[in-house]
Length: 527
Image (tube, rainbow, N blue to C red):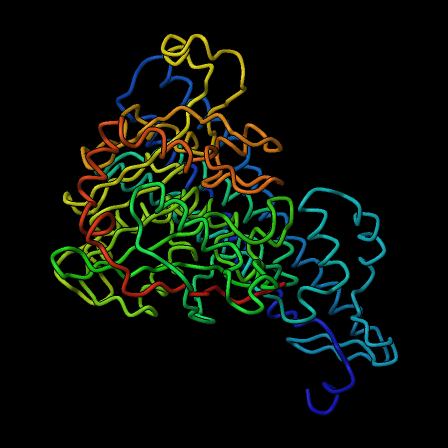
């Protein structure tokens, strides 16, 4: 291009056509995926009303969203080719423009704007159209995408999500376990999101649903005035405390919670003199659910996008946070580790415990002997620990309106209002698409009655899901999971056995705290 490149901007028509080739290839892959899914579902030996309902849902997905997505990709490919031809004709006809085999330029006198040809005016009315096709048409029409060379990340992401979704069915067809309904649902949502975002991602990097898992440690902060846990309720309180401003740490109250996440790691010495480690996986953090930053752009890896990606069975940035924090805290390979989590934290913990590359006792690099995974309010019913020796216990809250509880405590109904925690139900009880369920004697679910809060100001949903219930009047000692564990951990047989198993190793008399740190870790902040 010579010196003209300094004065002129334009469309690289060769790259434009290459992008069209990628779109058409993605459409072909999607068509192949639809055929494989249809064949696999049709060949499944599953009969009855549930099977019929599932086949209907799959048919609607195949003939609906997936077919429409393929048609959209083909439409975009055709539109890109038309734009390339229009750009070359416009540049050739312009006295200042230069028509070349690969790049069409606009004159510098155009105020630095890209020359898009006659299709610009036709595309402008589509600016307010809600459909993704309208957004892409607008972007292509103004020459923004291909004029800057284009970015195939959006298309690559669609292909990756398609590959993951088709891989689940291919594994099933090859004799593996059928995917769970929760995995299928989360994977479908990620695919739908990738398809919807592909046009925008071709223009700019929004960070939405970004699968990046490269994380960085920002700081390791010592927790002041800390003590070893004495019971299960203390574990929940310590997990909650890590995401709050640390008392005695200057400036911690002003920390930007969306910039990075926090993983708390406690080193304890047991009665036998051996050391073990308690890793606290954080719940969903950073920006609230309605803020787009919480779906990928923020530096805090524990955003809502990690909920979807982890539930889909994919590697998530939240999982990378835990592994990176454990290494930063100096936990030796093969060490005894207990992971404690609330909500998303429990889901992340259960996935690491189910990963044979992480949870193993032979001391392989980057692996640990995860002896326990203890969580509250987490949807972990789709997972089985990689080691039979690993104990996974999740606690969920039931409603005071549940029939069995009404029979047990008829005098307590209908006041106070206590509802079930809906988050643990998102695992859909571990049901697979073939009607079977995920089960393991090492993975147990404990259902406790949602506690009656002593302080006012909190909603029933907060009381049902929060690990530690906080109100305007302060911490409610009887509310949330901390309150229910204080009331019921001694009477429930599973929790009583868990407490006995942890006694003297991770908590209780004779256990001393060696070190307590919070590792600030996260991915690149794209906000």
